Length: 397
Image 1 (cartoon, helix red, strand yellow):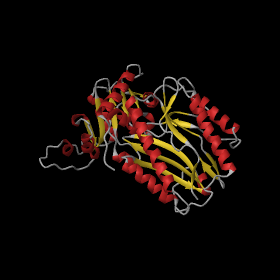
Image 2 (tube, helix red, strand yellow; image 1 turned 180 degrees about the vertical axis):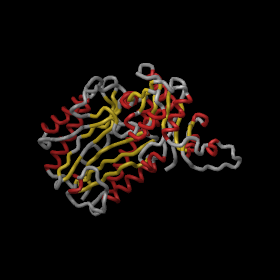
Image 3 (cartoon, rainbow, N blue to C red; image 1 turned 60 degrees about the horizontal axis):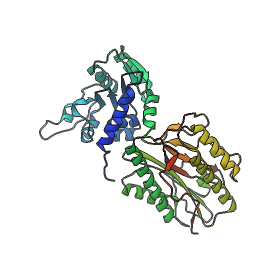
Image 4 (spheres, one colour; image 1 turned 30 degrees about the vertical axis):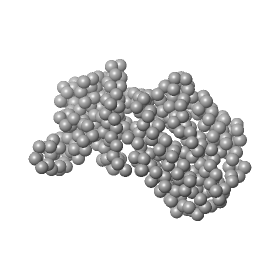
């Protein structure tokens, strides 16, 4: 998979949106810690964050400054991706060499002792030792929080995680394009997987087709769930060597990342003609998702969408009771973003929000099925970003 860097103009537009939101925030500067929030502010995605599962970087943003704190190992790739050399404060030990010895990354070893020391150095460099600063608290482990309190006793930190989520919830047009591109690639990959399926073909073989299609389209596979027969009820489970048999439900739940933006899509197929129950249940969950599409519009609370999906699935021949913890979620730089479509979510939809709506059903011993699609909220409704193979696809037996 060839590397693809996000459009610098979109990075600048996202940063401008953060700075615009700072004007009415309860703080004048903010520190991004999570991989998604750091990416939104800087445009840099760290391989180290993917490998270790914890972002090792921080971005200190003010109305006119952006300082980045990160391990030395992220300095050279960060500069290659557009981070400004003089505004990168490094910590830890890693060794880059240079023919002429002049490269900035070769001089950053042990500039700061650790992550907390780097963040403190950035704060003090901007003269903010007694400021009120927004902090990405959800991505700030307790030990790091304690270190920052010790190193910066004059700083008042305010929880800014919800602030970041609110800024990122409404997507810029360029972000919507990337969400759609990511979703369309996964949609095509699932269709390719269905085309490769048949009696005797294994889940793992189908999953490999899906993965190959994603990679060839410059999308990083993040999860590929292909489960069949009774295993289709296992929700998030890896594909195995189980071979497809006549009558099997085959459930796809696939997610990938394109230029930092997530996709998450669900489809269902059946090997041979479906039974009456398979048809009735699938028709019901599809009707439930369609009912969400019809209701969704600016101002509609997320919880109303949930209620409508449950009502329609139960009222159109589906499983009763139809029990779900949610029927959708926002999507963007993270696979699950606010708001979540669930009973306790009064948050209203806004134009520019991107969602995945979904109505899965899992019955152990019988099977599972799902349909999940991506959409963007418009001024007067929604626009689907995925719309192919939404029916119960029949795989020839």
